Amino acid sequence: MSLELHRVQDVVNELSRRITIRKYYEAVHIIDAVGKIALEDIIAVNDLPPTDKSVLDGFAVRSIDVLNASVDNPAILELCHRACDAIRHKLAIPVSTGDPLPLGADAVVPIEYAEVKNSKLYVYKPINPGYGVAKRGEDIKKGDLIVKKGTILRPWHIAALASQGINKVKVLGNINVAIFSTGDELVEPGSELAKGKVYNSTKYIVASSLKELNFRIIDLGIVPDDEIAIKRKFIEALNIADIVISTGGTSLGKRDLTVKTMSTLNNLEYFVHGVNIIPGKPCAFGVINGKVIACLSGYPVAALIELEFILLPSVFRSLGLANISRYIHVRARAKRRIASRLGMMNIIRGRIYNVGNELEFEPLKLTGSGVLSTLLKSNALLIIDETCMGIEKGDLLDLILISDPIKI
Image 1 (cartoon, one colour):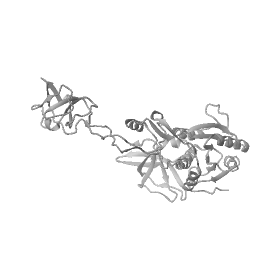
Image 2 (image 1 turned 90 degrees about the vertical axis):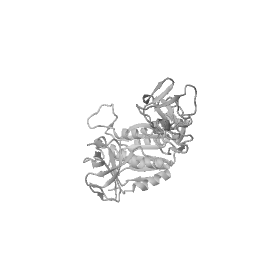
Image 3 (image 1 turned 180 degrees about the vertical axis):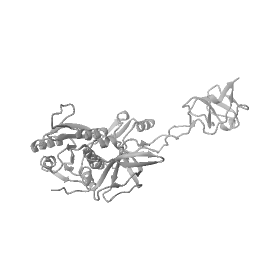
């Protein structure tokens, strides 16, 4: 018996059309928005800086007045000792870092380039126009897009919002995700590991990936390989969460009961078992009353791939957030030929190296869906489309960078 495999894109399209997550947004103070996903484009309403300003301690001048200054022939300027807000010919005004630039000034002479003697300023080096000056709007211009809808907010986004006087932002709320694992062989970390048992790592890679995106995790523990117990757990999860995830029991063996049980749930509007993705093809998805159920692999690598490439894109697209990515995309040359299965979306783990002025990608030799160390050893993922028969050495690749490249 074999699975009928459905295209990843078809599954994502169907799920995103059917998922309904109610009250998924909230307005939060910017200090509480770090790591959350912005649900609106935010446009700058002010220039930053709001006026030309000095970026160092020194003296505001007209650059033309110090154009030929030197140690042997210093430019001698009158020094303003009272409150002066405008520059005239051969006048210097003391300024500190952050001070608005006086009207008529176009440069700032650093303290170390000048000397005050007898109420005069002696300048010993020529200064170019714009030196020591931040121009109005140089950092951010009024009308600039400072946060794009779907952005995962980082500290620099928060600073940009604060610079505009914005103290609240509309973000994706803490969506409830209920997660449990199935398998008589599983025990939780921290428990004694009896003979024949294994620690449950898959649930934790899935839950922590979601927590990183500020989903609220409801851990429903481990369920034995028993159809009645699994069905009860699905029903419990559907009553308390918008998204239900199980790990394990997705294949076609006698003890693989999770998908079989999920398929018998009442009001199942959509059901699919088997997706053309490697690793992760035995996963299953369903929708009940707008809530999505994801039966992910019991193997950690496969479960992560299923989460990142099927479930999360479906959820985000259903919320109008189609372009979210927590990772950087880079281009690199294939270090060697990479085989792939035609008709399958192949997710290849590997390493990117800095080689001279180029990046090179080398796939890892061990790629099994249960080999957790491949994620520890890799720093990039390559997506090979289902229509591609393989990658040739030297081909330029689009890659997802999950950690820093290795320097050679």
